[in-house]
Length: 416
Ligand SMILES: Cc1cc2nc3c(=O)[nH]c(=O)nc-3n(C[C@H](O)[C@H](O)[C@H](O)COP(=O)(O)OP(=O)(O)OC[C@H]3O[C@@H](n4cnc5c(N)ncnc54)[C@H](O)[C@@H]3O)c2cc1C
Image (cartoon, rainbow, N blue to C red; front, side, top):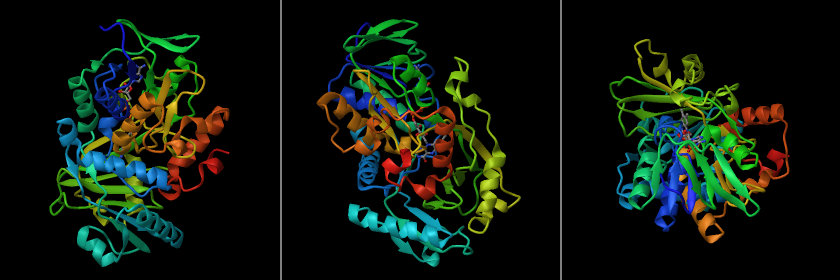
């Protein structure tokens, strides 16, 4: 067990592993505390999808940088990552959503992300299982991609270790030493590590870690699930990702079958303080009926899920953290010098983690991130206390309308 570190990262999921790697790459002596197995909680259960055209130019830049780093991941880190540039179709079934797609095409063009409307016939050429009925408009974004989620955080952990980072699985951060000048150390069952920098990347537990540091985080861990079918004849890795906006459903190829996931209107929200100390995300109660309801809601576009012969090979879920404006939450923890946060993944943290971890490392070392992170910075919530029911309701709404709003409303309106 080490006695000192320049920085201690709490959590080895996509966020923690990425910032640890990027800190280590800059010569920072970093330790990663993980209460459970390395990279074992929500991150490996993700769908692994990326989308680059986001609500604002700033968020789009972050997502573009992330996709570039995912594409170059093995070259950069020496670690394996299955990367598939499958492209993505986005489907509007209402005029309202077609208008959203038009705005996305405009934003994509301005940002240099290839995206355009395609005909239903062209979409079906790329995705032959797509039904024709009920579609008003479709966009095609050829550079969107998907990755094998389990490989990304563990790859960053291993790459960080090669650069000198100390990985400490099964070693929870249990408390913090805070002095007059801020963070001084972190207590673990194996001893205290003296450090001036702590990064709270504790996923579903991030609020508890922030509380221990003397701060507060307005995020709500929210259950999100997906299923993967047994292999289906004719389904190939070339199939693009498909998203249906109003149904909040996504579909992609996985292991010769189809992956389906989505956003239910009234998701299970978790208070991390009620989880037992040894809780593992693998024990999260799942409900496959949620996914079948979502599948039925897109039965015209994806009739294949109504086929009685379809068999589920895997059903998984995890606990992403939501914010009230459906945007990430990153930066210094307000009021606690030396404490930093990477949270509020809003079910999009895995794919953005390469760029966010890089920018956070720059922020910590250089005093400012290389990319503008002001729209996702912790500062936007400083001094804006929400009571718990209001926080939960707004996070529920952000989750339920994830594809609709996509964070399009200005953050200042959304957090009111
Ligand atoms: C079904 C599903 C589909 C998804 N699809 C996508 C997708 O397509 N694209 C995408 O980008 N994202 C997706 N996500 C979201 C993605 O999984 C998350 O954004 C990402 O995993 C968040 O990473 P994290 O590091 O914050 O959390 P985690 O992976 O949960 O890591 C946090 C870690 O902190 C540890 N920890 C907590 N407290 C302590 C402590 N006190 N001391 C030490 N360690 C601690 C935990 O044990 C955990 O390992 C999906 C999620 C789910 C569940």
